[in-house]
Length: 397
DNA sequence: ACCCGAATAT
DNA sequence: AATATTCGGG
Image (cartoon, rainbow, N blue to C red; front, side):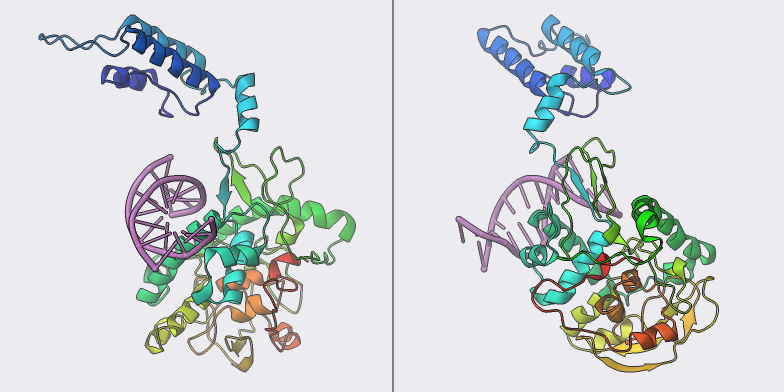
């Protein structure tokens, strides 16, 4: 079986010893064909290639196979890929297990993931618990296991070399500024259609109430008509299927409350792990192994990009459980890649812990204005049970 | 039986 | 690189 449907490859495969060649994705007909040839083989009619002659003669394949190839090629075509038969569709519907949609970890979903981990505690965060905590319909333990694996690798990396790659910080003066924004573009493309669609009409820019149960809408809605997810699934044939629920908010970059000077553009959800969002986790991770590594993480300050000019005062420190320790001035930089607060603080924590509209801040891309901070003076930490009352990702402005 | 997570596959 | 699947082990 191969997804390669080029005649060339098919022929070479068969010449090389394959008895039959099926172009993926396999459908019922293919199976029928397999049986056909299997039976034929058993009957005595060998379908495999003939033995190589002593001479330098090329392989010769027998007629049946040869025509089978042609059939396949005719059926599937060479360039555009095969046509889908009615039966195919049927197969897809009745055997969805075969072709599972590929989960895409959007920022919203990843944030949810992070929240779950935060809430559970990195040490106790195992797939099953995370899954429960996230309560996202359609999400499977396997999804989380996989993502968690990747996430841990990321944490490891961060822990090893003190977090931010120098390449990102200095390596490309221009690029470093662009990267985040190009990602932002992606994110916005991903969410904003829905976001806007749902915001503009009725609510006129006001606040969309957080979803009551705070549980995400289902992930898997085949034949989706109205986009209502925060996640993307990619079909096996690689079209994006669906996305965007109003509650995704963060990452869209359009959901910050316009509180004194919080720059909109700063709130974006870039690819979390790439954006070092997990820095905060990295911390607790390090904590588990004692302090020494602590100083190697972060200590960079808050990102400041062109949208925000003054007021770099944003230093707030929070304990792991969300208590405000102190606040103060902080040095900002411009490259948009720094993250959170310096070592003593808990980067990102405040962001996700309290202000539902700044979730993306976990990535160290938000600047909270003093006033905003003041208003949010204390940082709630009281998430009880596994389901936070209102997850950051569920509020949209 | 369950499920974790490294390894491996796609 | 991102996700999915496998598989030995607790």
